[in-house]
Amino acid sequence: MAGYFDSTDGTIKIIEYTWADINTNGETWADLTAWQSGSDAYGFQPIDDVADIEFFTAVLDLGRKDWVNPLCSVDAAGDVNIKVFASETATSDTIPGAPVINGQTGQTFDAVYGRYFQFKVEVFSNSAEEAQLNNVQTNLATSKQTEFFSEDSTNHNGTTDMRYPTLVNEYSKILLVNGAAKVLGETSDGSTAYSNAIGDRSDNNITITNNGAVADATNFKFQQASIRFNDNTGSALTDTDANISIPLVNTGITTGPFTIDFWYQPVKMTWLDSISSPPNYAHSPYFLHLDTSSADFYLRTTTINSHLGLEWSSNGSTWNTLQGFVFGNAPSDDWYFIRVVRQVTSGTIDVQLHNLAEQTTVSFDQDIQNGTLKIGDLGGNATVGNFYIDDLRISSANKYTFPVTVPGAEPILESDTEFLATGQTLQIVPPTTGDLIPVVAVGTLTDRTQARYTVYRATGQPVDAFVSLQVTGLPKLSSDAAGNLVQGA
Image 1 (cartoon, rainbow, N blue to C red):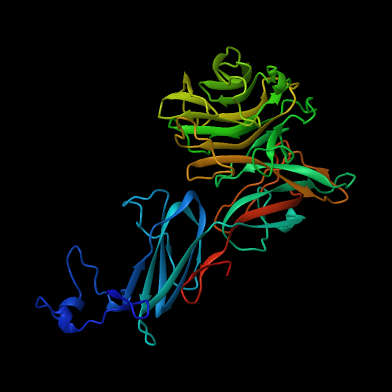
Image 2: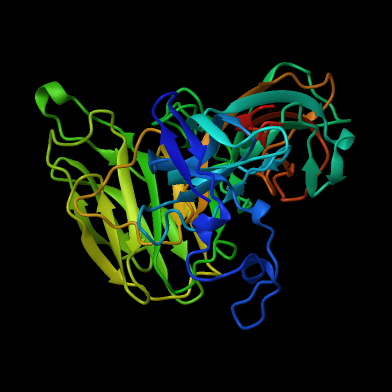
């Protein structure tokens, strides 16, 4: 069917056809409605299944890739159905494409990931009203909702390995679950405690082995916390050599392109800008180790040209200079963006330091799917004081840019993000008896509305505990009785 714009009242209305209008080539009504045969036949299709009015909005650009609740409010007569199209790129092959949402009425939908969006509004006449479209309002909603709760994990559904918290709110997409925990039935003074939550924020929910690293809400690149390695007094932690290990087996990365990037703030031992005193960057023997069965790659900080520099090694002992800043040209907050990228299958690793030119480091064509990425105070030196890392990300894609494109001011989750860790902290008031768990690993969502988490001891054994959790995500997305796509209803 077709429609036209009635300028007298500013609405889209249907064009009424008679049989004389349609019968221009000798066809009969029976020709159009009879059961068809042949390779392209789909059988009888009632004409009422075709919308009387179809209206496409312009393509909307969110400006970034993100999880979105695509909202649409329609003022119309008749029955309304809304279709949503989405893509990470805007080409004729991707937009409109197949709809990611087919509205109807009384339905619940997942949030949609993308940057470019388009809406199609269909209006059908019914026995009471002739189709008419008066107004269409759209909105790409990215605002999040957050809830907190504290309970004994044994009260939640699921196994010890996978607990499902009872949520108050409903979600179209849960983006983050983090928190802290305390084991019950043991001795403690019951005082208010702070515990770290360093976990994978991607949908893969990769388990981190944490050896003494903590979330630090007093020093970070982006809110609300960074990951601190060793304590904040300049001396070593009592458990020494703070680091985390991330298995790469579940990332889907094998011999192809990959990117590891993060923000890094080093230990600055001596620095007086006013007298151009050269810094002395303390470091462990190395702070990054890409460990595979057949080859290794190491990174460490050093002092080059009176400022921070990087060196690489294939064995952890013989070092090669990469690059460094000249005095006065480094970031004012001492947070440096570091990127390690393999651009193609069976290629070399390129290392990029903030806005400096990259240096190709070493041929590295190994299959890393059974490897491990280790970050922290590695190599046996626990006396270098503290350093910080924020937004540690692993991507199964080539993220190389030249000059280096420094990311924005929030954690970025994209479709190729296999792992993303940031520091998160929560204050908990534990029971009067109990033993604080050294490590709390908290997972993200498994489906559109269900959060999950696992509590581990330092040994890696899952346990039940008193938990304090934070859940963040997009509110529920649904279609109401009028066919509108609405949030939170």
